[in-house]
Image (cartoon, rainbow, N blue to C red):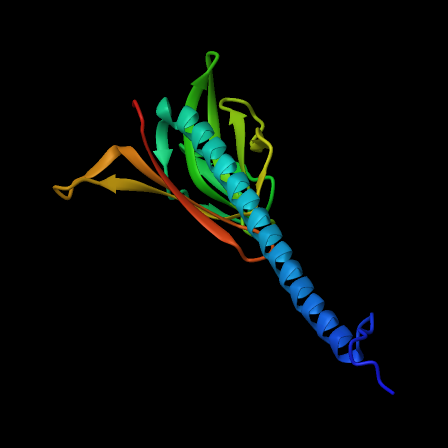
Length: 192
């Protein structure tokens, strides 16, 4: 005889399979959410690093160029050498391309300076040498900024079509090893 009023305690195989399936779905959703949040945090962190580096680069270039003389935003260079105000200097790297060259005064000394972009190593840095010395090699003056994909300096064209000799637009693009890139722009006005 069967006991109709008696309840069996425990789970049937079907109920157990349903619990496992629901738990697996919830676990997969939680894992996907965690990975997405981690990637977004990582991307935001990289963007903050790019922004901080762009501010530092712009600040250094502005400080140097504001009082500079003989600014050349398209310097000619060949074979690891660049000419600044008629004097030829050796660059510290063959793969480095000068973006801007200029002369400025620092503590009574006249200094030839160039900002270089090494597209192979994705580095951006400043090199300089005292003018009037027999040494014709530009030496690194700053630490390199990494992940710099491209950097340009352009003269600003005013609304009436004239080109300013004192106003410059700086365009900086970063790219990390995952292909994420950010582009920043700024403008500076020189005094000379």
